[in-house]
Length: 88
Image (tube, one colour):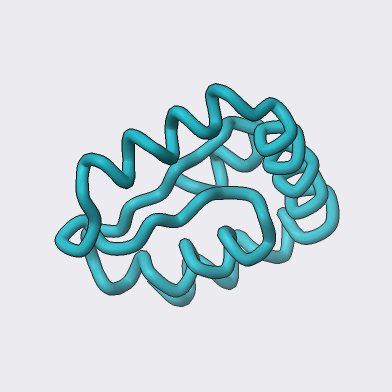
């Protein structure tokens, strides 16, 4: 689901609910395409709220996420999909 959101340049705050989601979420966060908060069991509603408010108040963050998503999809999109499918 995250690659689809990246392809559509949708800002994403990611929260994992399973171990197989962590590595990819961390990599997408590191690349600047999403904000990964961690596992659902380890975060608070306050952290989610602050993150979303920060995104709403800071267009620069949204612009950066958009640019990073676009860069990932233009550069690696066709190569990423088979690799991710193999890992899941």
